[in-house]
Length: 158
Image 1 (cartoon, rainbow, N blue to C red):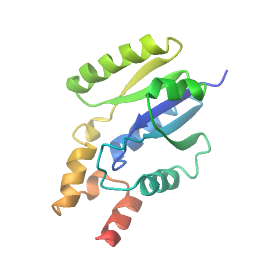
Image 2: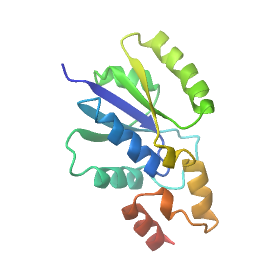
Image 3: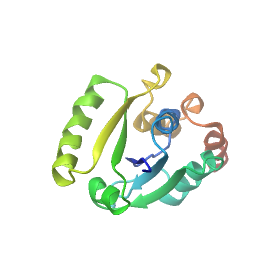
């Protein structure tokens, strides 16, 4: 049986912390789908197309990582793909409290889907897309939080 996990998020931008969670997930699952949630009410720094392009480039040598986008409920999207796991990364106890609530709702909606939490490496415990967006916006040093190919592209965009 193929163990398929969905790793959902907006990934605006996709940080080294996200990269770490996918790579750790590959130690457990046969395949990981990085699923970019589309929320029309949310203003993103980077377009959906740009985020997908970066993530695809990061995993171009790993055929067991796929990148997709979706709208709506994550658990329902996972069901539509026959994914049986939702992969989530944890940095702090606050992350756990928040993710636990979502996991319970997902399990109520889709009992066949299990949430799996993976601790981020401690070097990524302070990394969040929100902080990285602020660093980019206000010209702080964001390079240690992002994969190098993204850093180069962002510098070219400015």
